[in-house]
Image (cartoon, rainbow, N blue to C red; front, side):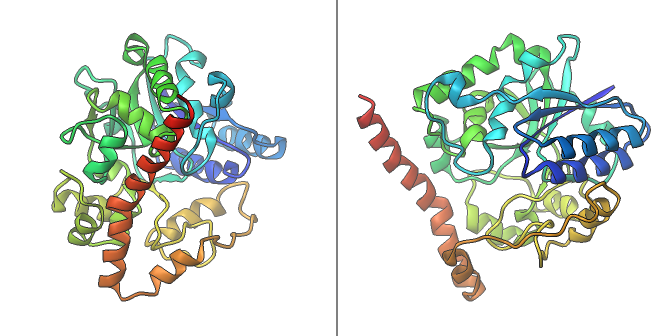
Length: 333
């Protein structure tokens, strides 16, 4: 039995459903049990999600009410980006049967193009999780209390040893970190998970979490744009782009996402294929909503665009976080 965990609110329910269809279509040789951290999915979409499981002869999804992080900590917590539903995964050990010793967490904005057996059977080497090494500059590490040589990872795909998660008391460690930072974390829940698990994880092949920047930039452009202290080799990323097993349609200033009109991602048609196979086949694509600043940067010559975007990404965002964090700490003294 392969245990897959998603977290979704009402807005992302159809996107979750498309991901599930791709998962079942490409993993017919294994029994899959879906667990959903539900942050307000409406009844109609719940029934459609259950319909997907039924159509693939899978067990009914395990619906888990998403824990409200702000209520749990009795303080205001910022998502930074994305949905607050993502914080619900911090509490996953509360809701899964103790007999479940391994899970694969997937963000809703993923599709699976092949078998997950090799990933599922990864030797975690006595670590809590296997993750994607993410391309963040050293300044982000400082903001989540990490050293320069500590890894920062993308938490959208995580293979987790639940036994070790419980033994290491990851939930309370993450909550303590969020509390100590007054609910304002660089990169939101992902930043908090990095703070706790950076030294307790291994990095898997990037083909298991092919994020959008792999497709938007050449290898040299990406290193110049993000400036990570260390990263995968160019060959590893070329293989991930050519043969992705999990495609992760992350937010990028350069491109839209496949449920948006006019998406230019090279794997847009793959997402649309699974949408057409899902109960949301007739759901219309949406218009992109971006600020005028993003549209303005996109229109610049590519070299200038990358230079400006790189300054904002490498230095700007972590610097603004530090300013806001100092204000918050002064206020809470």
